[in-house]
Length: 378
Image (tube, rainbow, N blue to C red; front, side, top):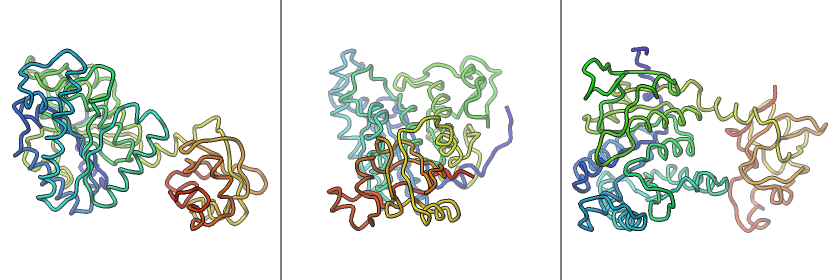
């Protein structure tokens, strides 16, 4: 493991997802820790004032619900866990709303399931909502929708959700706040020779070998889920920091370039990761054909594809599919993520964005393919 700290990773991050676990949020299950949540919200506000966009992924609903219901032990029945989540979610959302409002920020509660992020249309809808909230300087507070999930509910195991959200909003960094200082080569509570890992490559197989099991009676994620979350986040180019949640001003200091916790560095830049994924598609469901003017703007000026430059649509595809873009000679000159399905695209050919609402009954993105989601063939 290298000991060099890449301080610029967090200092340069403009969009950051922060995940905090149940043991921290609920002070080891004793109820919502108002002081701690207030402190994190103060730091989130400082990041927003610094021109950054932040998303909070917070565990703690079930733990808070158990406290409110007077349950001292975690029930085994799924419907009882779902009931606890429903009760606790009220307090969790209220606490974040209060503390963020004190800092002059708006907040929004967003409940997601893994199914939401697996379905392409729901994925894109969630993405659009979150990006709109960030543009409005509203802090989304995200939790898994434990009241409707069918699989086993795990306390505090939102590390994977944090990584999925980082991918969803194309974050630059994921910060996982936990009850440990970071990653060690072995469990320091059992092995006095364990060494602290300051920095490593996200996805390094050696990390999984050294990660221990769950150490908290409240959070069941353990270090292994954080290692795997960092690996997942790295797939879209986001680096991950695992740090102690009660470290004073941890979020602010990280964005100032101070080395805190364990940094797991993504090996691919954010834009490169997304565009490489698109470039690697062997089969595409469809294509749009463009006129010479649109082809020149795409190829030479790096512009987005606007429907007014489209002349025809080939195949059947859905919103979010990777499609080819062909010039007047029928040659593929680019590919990218479609903002509209093929049926809608056919109606939009040669039309200006001002006509979309009349044609479709709604107006979403003005582009057929945004330049950030476009790979031009060179």
